[in-house]
Length: 91
Image (cartoon, rainbow, N blue to C red; front, side, top):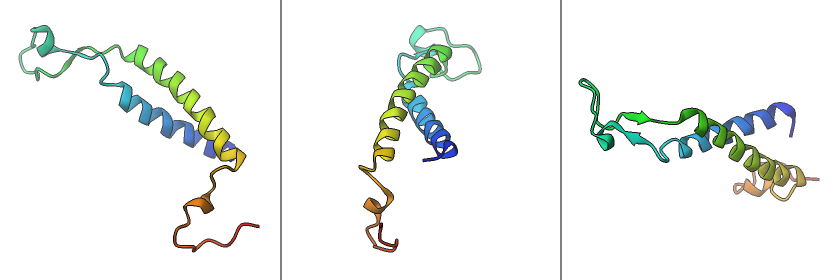
């Protein structure tokens, strides 16, 4: 795995983790009973976005280390997913 593929792998893991962390502990305007006219009651009032970004960064770094170690060790390779046997054999 090269530097570019490592960065791309981290970016994909970071955004997937961020989308999972984003709705956790969100307080909406409807929950607090203070709905601003013209907005949806499900609009966030307190989103804690900076804290969630830092949590996402830490979790993504841990997941990246685990996944990169699996890829670099060769436990799982591209040939493991070649169900149609269209790739040349690994030597």
